[in-house]
Structure formats: C-alpha cells, structure tokens
Length: 386
Image 1: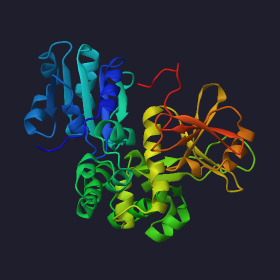
Image 2: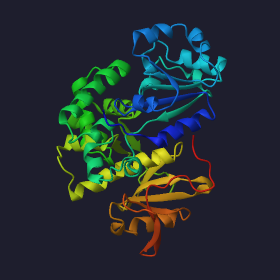
Image 3: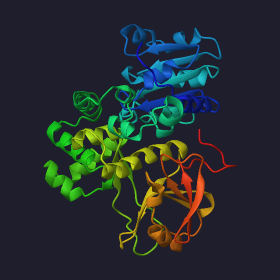
Image 4: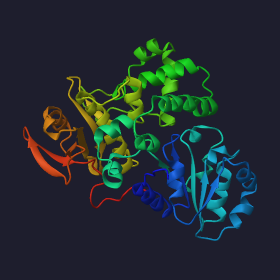
C-alpha cells in the first residue's frame, strides 16, 4: 500500500470554510496533494473532472446537482478541466446551498479567462502548500529537519527514500507545459525556465531585475511579466518590504522565495544539507506556516539602509507589528536589527521561530525579549481565519 500523509490541519480548514460558504476552492501546484486530501473527506461523492464521463455529466450541472440530497459533500476534482469551471459552482451555491462543494484545481486558473468572478461571496479560497513543518513533526513523525529541507514538501517526494533529480526536472517541464504555456501562453520556454531556475537558485534573496534580465537573456519588462505569472501560479512567493514610512528603510525591492525547498536544493545540486544551508531553507518553512496561520494578513520583511534586517514582519490589529526571526538554533539570534526596528515600531511581539522549541519559552538578548517557539499563529482571543 502506498504510504499516505494525513493532513488534519487542512481538513479542519476546509470544514471551517464550509461553515461560512457553500463552496471551498482548493488550489495548489501539481503534486502538492490536492486529490489525496480531497479523498480523505469521509462520505463524500468524488467526481474526477479529468474523466470524459464526468465532463459529460457536468454538461448539465443542474441535473447532476439536483440528484444529490442536502448535506452531501460533493468533490469536483481538477475542475479546471471543465470548459466553464465556474458554472457548476455558481449553480450549486445559488440553487443548492445545502450541498457542500470542494472544487480543486490548478493555482493558475484564477488568472485565466475561464475562471470568472461570478463566485464572489460564494466561495472560500484555500491554497494548499507543501507539507508544513508542524505537520511533519506532529502528524507524521518525520521530525528530521534536513530530510524535509532536502526532499521538499510535495508528499511523494517527502516520503521517498531519496530525492529524485529526474522527478524534480520532470515537474518543472510539466509545470511549464501544462500551466505556463497552456494557461498563460508564454512561448519563450528557454527564457522562462532560465528565469525560474535562477529564482530557485537565489531563493530567499532580494529580486534584482536587471541581473535576472541579463542572465536569463530576456528583457527587464519580460522578467517582471514572467515573475508575475510565477507568483500567480504560486511557484514563487514575493515578500515585499515593510512600508512604515520611516526614512532609511528599504521599500521597493521584494524578496523571492521558491514554493518548495526540495526544488531549491535540486537546482543548487545539493545531495545533503550542510550547516550553512539550513538557515535560508528554514525561512521557507516559516513562510509557509506564516501564510497558513495568518491567512489574509500581509507578511513582509524589514530592512534598513544600514543592512539591519528582520526575516518577516506581520501586521496585527491596532497598529502592532510582530517581528519574526528564523533560527534553527535560537541562541544565534541577534537583537541588533530588532532594536532598530522597535525604535520605529515599538508595539508588537518579537519571535524566534525555531524547529526545535516545544513548548514555547521566553528569553532576553541584549535587553530585547523574544518568544522562542514554532511559527506564531493567530493571537489568543482573535478570530481564526477561514
């Protein structure tokens, strides 16, 4: 039997989505586990829209939806394969609100003309990330950080005995052919993949459009266009600098993070994780968890022109801003940047996100107090995001 990664955090998130909307839209890059997650929902009616028979049945969505009793969970997997993916979802929400619909599809569908805005107010949108670190440690007992960093978080790769360079290369080719070319119409395969591979290699660094243009041999405007497509497809996450209005802050150059550490390691040619590699790769896992726990909140980074930098900052209510430093070893945290940040923005909590601290504890460094633990989620007493 093929091993399966159970993902209770995401199953809970889907249930919370249904509490407020009849349709939950679950997107994600290919092989991230959307179908496996959907099949974990008990007593659901599963329809694979890749199958011609299912597409024929959905040619008359009114008839199909009317055949199911209220309270039924109906899964429309790979819904982007339908000629009009939004039509059955709109009819379900408007005419059959007693049904609970889970629609899965490509991350890029929202950017195409086939995905119309008629679902506004009818759906909750979830983006399924690669396996989170807290899922590894808590649910699967895969508490080997280097394994998660090297293999990445696509379930098949994470469970494999060893990373497969052939599988990583095939994924990139398939991503271009089935997402980028098919849905965005990008014809310059060589230039696009050159840019993507550069971004994988430099993942976690600031974006230098001029350098990317020169090395990928495409124009600067084309770099920006392709980067926008990669962000829409969730293959690259751009983290913008925190804009507080203070003098001397970096405010224009984003940092680019690849969607998965396994692809970063593959592009760099790593066969093992060295001591110096863990830091920036751990930032990727922290970013994944921040986006999961702070859905709808803007995650940024902060840097001043003196070179002092905080890995991530998260806006909270009431003008508060939390500062998050990512350290595999929390004893390596320096208070220098946080002190400079707090002189400008005094309200907020300072965190050290580390893979090894459970339960969280407090410590002082250079007069600065930090909460050391996993990735900070919603504050107690605040509403959890749907």
